[in-house]
Amino acid sequence: MTPAPTPQALWAQLAPSPQLVVITGEIGAGKTTWCKTLADWAQAQGARVGGLLSVGVFEGGLKRAIDLHDLSTGQTRRLAARRAQPDPTSPTPNWEFDESALRWGDAVLAAAPPCDLLIVDELGPLELLHGAGYQSAFPLIQRQAYRLACVVVRPSLVDAFRARAAVSAVYSVG
Image 1 (tube, one colour):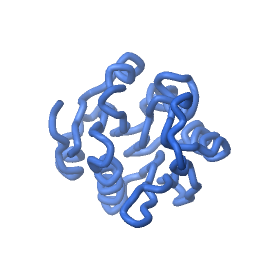
Image 2 (cartoon, rainbow, N blue to C red):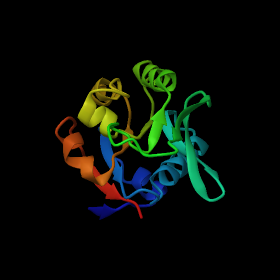
Image 3 (cartoon, rainbow, N blue to C red):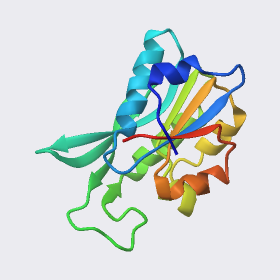
C-alpha cells in the first residue's frame, strides 16, 4: 500500500472523472484525523463536503465512545460505546453500537446530495461481512456523484471492499 499523501496533495492530483480512494491503517493510526483534515481543508476551499466521520471520544487517554458526525449538516450522534467486557459473539466485540445512530448514519448516506468530496468513515465488518450498518454507502459510491470519495476501511477488509467497488487507489495512514 502507498502511504497517504497530504490532503492537499491528494486534492491537487484529482482527475476530471470521479475517484474513489481507500484510506486504511491499523487502529489508532490516524485515519479519521486524516479524513477530518481533508474535509476541513476542502471546505475552506469552497468544496461541497458530505458523508460521515466516526470521531473517537477519549477519556483518560482511552477511547470510550465513537460519535458519528454528518459532514454536510454538522449534526452528531453517539454511535457506539466501548463494552466493559468484549463480546466474542458480536461482529464488533469491543463496541456496543446504537441501532438508531446506525440507521441515522445510513439515512444520511442514502440522502446525500452530489458533492465535491464524500467521506465514509468507516465501512467495517458490519457493512462488508454482515450486510448491516451503512448499506446505503454502496449505491452512493456507485452513483459517483462526487469528485473524490474517501472511504475508510481496515486493512483486513480492503479486499472485501475492492470486490464491491472500483477503487482508484489505496492509501495507508500511520
